[in-house]
Image (cartoon, rainbow, N blue to C red; front, top):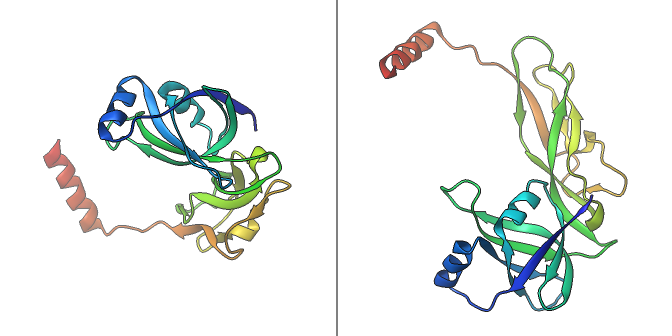
Length: 199
């Protein structure tokens, strides 16, 4: 996983007013913690941070004004409840090369289910794993080719990259295939009438 370099400035103002001023200046307030050191309060450029967060569990090289240079991963991101693409606050966890961390990795699927209107249900959208901080996999891929209703994929069935182990029970259900529910004709008619009324 490549590092993303982001410049940060120490934050000395706190409270809602200070946070509003920070966001008005296109910066995001954040805190860096871990390794038993005092939390470091910073602000980061909003656009650079937003771009970096497009990669799950992105590894960030934080270049803090004043000489500090830290390796961090995002641990908690607060997004604006209404405005898309607006970050309100971020918690960043200090990491070191060779150190193990527990993160959630997105689950991707490949292949097609068995024919017959089956539906795939995601019981987990991301898989908790323990992995080296500087080699966090961007995702794990699961083949669902030919699976029929009733099939379940458990955590232990997923192939993990070298150096990555499960941080969840092996028997935890991750994906399951369910038969599509056939709707009664009367219900379909009622839905059609409702849609017609809305139109």
